[in-house]
Image 1: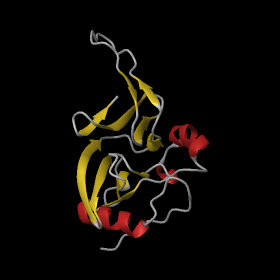
Image 2 (image 1 turned 60 degrees about the horizontal axis):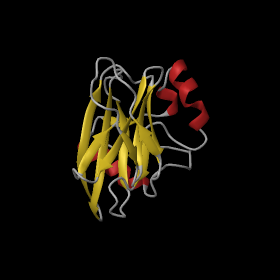
Image 3 (image 1 turned 30 degrees about the vertical axis):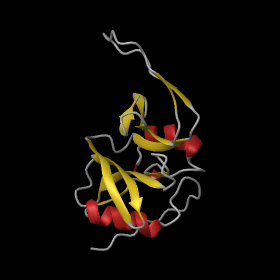
Length: 170
């Protein structure tokens, strides 16, 4: 089975589309990148201000500070055409070698979910959750991160936690 990823937006995209296509085919053979046309009316409205710079289904940055560009994807099931999406993060280990570190099923969110890069240096503040007695966290990003948007609901930022040596979210 051959997949092609056709993306015409310049910013926020991987330098090597062949590399991202290879990863998707290897790990998720029945999936392809979530794109702007996959968003519903509300999702398109939420994403519109970012449309000229980014694709809603891919972020390519160095997430863990090793000077190698990693990938984050939102993937749609091309066989079933369901509203389910997979959120996946791959860390580059070496040339042509990646490790899948995050793999979440987002059931029913295809029309309203997208990802954006968050650049190093940004300060993230945790919002107050209902019935939470824990203090709210405040984090200054050392590396790029991924912001997962659920339009009209919430956003979650996945960042590399240097102390834990793994992804964390806020």
